Image 1: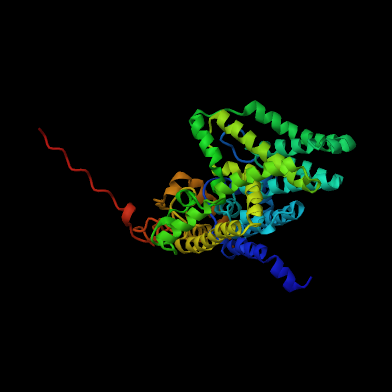
Image 2 (image 1 turned 30 degrees about the vertical axis):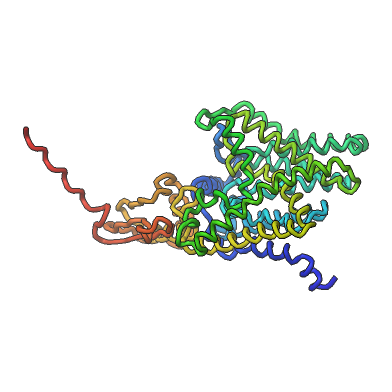
Length: 496
């Protein structure tokens, strides 16, 4: 096969891979808010003390997460203190691994490979892969876990089973959240292959047993310390609704409200009507999942010999969704988008089955291409718009990392004994964010600069009148101004 034949045959895969690689052109546009700063701060602290982290961040359930993300950042910070470079490397690894796994799963299942690559241009995946949050590690690792089990079912080679067991351990010590749902479902569905189990049961039990023993200390800690939080409780009907509509993470529906409100403003690149139409078209993912569920039933009923891997993925998807609904509805908790970092495999695989079937008929092919085209147009324009506005003023995204580093660099190079005014919401909510950035910038100085006695500095937005601009700047003055001016004394009360 010539190079031209490869390009023609895989042109849609190539287009999606190129689109997924676009964020690498501006890695400084990543968010840097709360958890990211704590992870980097912990990694800096452990590197300074000369030891390895033994735990990660404190979760919402009263349990400390695993240390692997912190260890990763310890390694990266030992090489460079440039966070933009670390963002570039993390996004390259996470997105590259995810695309590689999805293309391989497409080869294993016989489904159209380009549809599997659509996950890489999900705006929510962009947030998780681009940020230095620990959630972003889970997305490609979960896909890799499913691929490892699928390869073991096909080849029965022990290396794939060992890889699956190792990935289970890595996921548990990364962030357990809802990872246990996918681990339990994917492992249980391997056991459903009873012929394989009869032939290789000592190997399967020994390999998975070693993985379970490695996870046991942390699992016991979770069981002893996990606490329910009443403030997270929600009515069960609402928990069911959020669980069933969580497939919106594969679209642009609701994304702007949480991360980038300016996507709905007149400053966005696309006209309002066209923007609304494209966002509505990305909501096609919801019927795709429903169609995929019906098709999966037909695949299971046919029980064809060449659908063994697909049957495994279908069973895993069904079990994951059932466990997810039981957990969130039973606990009375909303299924937020960050909980999809593990169970996304199940929902997306059903949509993948639907797109594969739709591509066999003309109207269905146009429907699938329309959804994909809308995702691509919004993906590219959102990246350009995000670069233009410098992020947002929402606490879920905030100012882009590169601009925050400029602010921290300005503060470090011009130290002062006067207090610094920072009337920025994200820094008021998470003051450690700016402190960590200043610590990083200070470590890159060759010599400490002189400290000024009478320099007043204000960190504020470049365009205070624009509610959608996230750009920050530092105003310096040798004379008091603005918030540094003495407040006038209140008027004296008149005597009765």
